[in-house]
Image 1 (cartoon, rainbow, N blue to C red):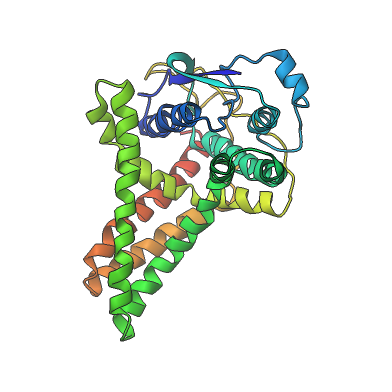
Image 2: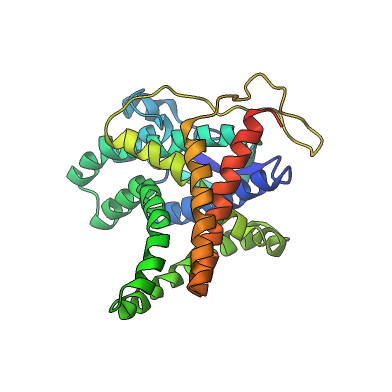
Length: 318
């Protein structure tokens, strides 16, 4: 299988598409390229790749028991010994979802499908004769989406911890020690910095969107946590394709297209409640002068607020 890098024909359409382009550039330029060059497993991205038919047949053909049939087939083929190639310098044009509810559908499918594939294939990975470093990387690759329930947990605990720190004595040294984990955000920034520098001359301008992307990633925690738990508990759901509206130029319109999703799910209500929760949390941090907590609370507020409000707005066709 040969997988080229996807380019984005509508990356400059809106803040939503620009944030997606930043995220996907990191996946292709860093994740796919480094995994492939290091001899680890990579995945077919569902489009723009070229397969040898005998590879598909030998791997057991397409299966319909996960929502990530492309990832599933990719791992089964590589477990059979087939070699994959990623071409960073060959690109294929692709359209990014301009509607946040379409993006939620896509992210839900990707998240749930990856966890389903992990449950299905990790036992085979660990029973194989692959080197231990490949087995470990496969495990990280297939289970990475389990981060979303923890993002949600961190969001919920953030405000109680601010209150506990200021109401209960004896915990200051623990809070001081745990603050070192703030440094983890530096590696995330460097990841996307190098991805943008590698393929864009205007990478500095594009990186200005990094805080928006981080906040948006937090805002998708409700949607993607639901996907993770459905996969873990074996709940099956239909394959919902990502709507494509032929959005290329800034003047192109999508609100009147047939595939626009008008349904407002329960997740939107949770996102808006979490928005109110963090308004309260920021007020508490100001009251206790916990200034260091405010930047992260602002990101959660912006993430849940933006995702929830856009979900309502786009569902109403505006």
